[in-house]
Amino acid sequence: MVCKGIKLACASAAFVAATWASAGITYYGVPTIRWGLVGGAIGVGNCTIESFEDVNLEPGLQVLWESPAGNVGPTSTLPQTFNPSTDDAFGSAFAGGNYDGTKCLLNVRTNRTFTYGASSNYGDVTFLFDPPIKYFGVSLHQSELSPRVFINGVEKGTVQALTGLSPGSTRIGYILIKADGADTISSVKFKNGVNPSGDGFTFDHLAFSTEANPTFIAQGFKPADWGIDDSTLGVAGASIEDFEDAALVGGLSVAWEAPAGDIGPVTVLPNLFNPNTDDPFGTAFIGGNWDGVRCLVSARGNQSFNYSAGSNWGDVVLNFDPPQRRVGFSVQQMDQATRLVVNGRDAGDFSGISNLSFNGARQGYVRLDAKAGSRIASVRFANGRSGSFGDGLGIDHVAFGGGCPQDLNEDTFVDDLDFQIFVLAYNILDCADAGMPVDCPSDMNLDSVVDDRDFQIFVIGYNAVLCP
Image 1: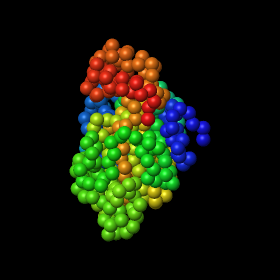
Image 2: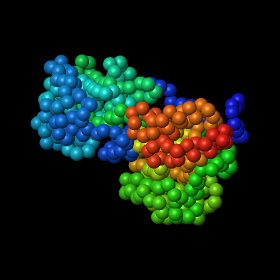
Image 3: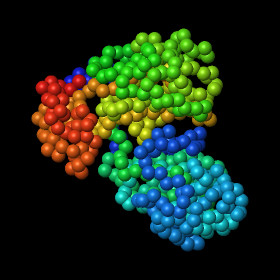
Image 4: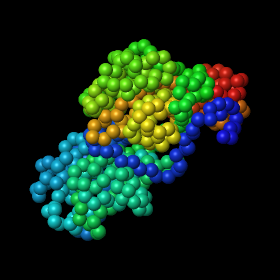
């Protein structure tokens, strides 16, 4: 391993650094077990939502229908609404297509059914966005022949190939598409799976946002490093929550969301969990404590349930107020593909982000460093088991803060280059000014202005030079 700059992870040969996500368009399919969940639970936090409950579409969105029988659009006003339970005179094929509410969008230019045999009326649907967006999500139902996806007019592949969601005659799942780097999305087309037309399907809960996903680098420490010191982890000086008592450290709250019910966010744990003594159902979580004797567990309320009672084993959400530039945590017993959702947006599967394996034992420690002016307000462990949420995992040694907020160009030093960036923001003053860099990173005390109080904080890092 060749190391540049300061000590960081060179102290551990077991260190693994996940790479930056490359610029481009990426795709993910949320399985039907999560049908009906909203916001961060499906990875569309902080998005505009169009649920097709009335004929007026959200500003910035238009729909185009194309079929051999005729085209309609682009339009920001639906011809009519479609309730799949009451507005289909020809059968019940589309019942259940509503993700929320009672209505959804049909791939027919009238947004109402024709006889199922009138295949020329069931065509393609294109969603158009002005201004272009960075993030897109929509549910898909009744797609028996996986539609082909076109982004900005360019074919990318079938829904199944891109997202892993299989075609079928019921609910298919929820589709997420995100543009990374400088890329944007001006149109998303779903081209009918039958050539040239014929298959009927519905969409609902369309999410879109011009705001990019939070950007971060993930660094993973393998199980052989379990329990190593904070300096080696790169979280020296951070606030640490080890879950040894019920009161959480200031700035952190925890929530559990499971099919059986949600708890939190709370700043005082409902229960303490010692994996060696507090699990009457088995020994799965022994060793989940990074330090001390306790940890956080993904069963709602921070207590164990019968391992087969999958509806009690759900998501865990760590919330940070104020948002942080650096967050770390240990993970144990993750034996299914869990997604990490950062600030309500799907960021990818845990293993791909951290380069740590799903192995049913200790995964290791992960540190997330926000980049490009981003801050981390929440981290959700979106449970990966199918059938029910199901998978249990232990989390410990949650670290947040630390690092070096004065390192504005993120090169691990606080020097004249950072000072030049700070001065530009100082002269602008107001974080809401259009000329201020995204997320106003020079606002050290998070009071929405860059002034003398921020300069006092900046000087501390400037005098130290090296950034831990």
